[in-house]
Image (cartoon, rainbow, N blue to C red; front, side, top):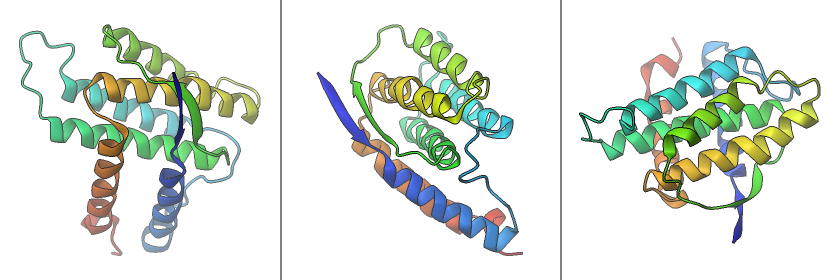
Length: 173
């Protein structure tokens, strides 16, 4: 059964935070450029690796997972997805099958591959399609496979955004 998932709240919040960073730190974030930068790709890949580290799926000797840290890292991935969607000027509404994957390692490898190839497309419409049809659905399935749901992800996302606004490194200097 497919489900329609609306993540436009992430786009909206990331746009607001980008404007905040621009006004407080002079950081010009990339919105509506209609392309995905190498920096955005590395940022999303980096956050994905943090999810892998927190999930400890690659550490048979250590299965003590801090679920609070894990959902926070998933919310960081969601932030990066929102930033890329803002750059591509696209809606972040996807229709996908929700499945819990038994071999989550393959899911992480597939998502990583698709992230790293996101800027290897010649048109923004293809990048949009990859984000909508490959990256976001794989990410959502990883969220579920790790034992979370979208409500928990949304709650963690807003909790992290609140922390970001209070973080001294993001405040006016």
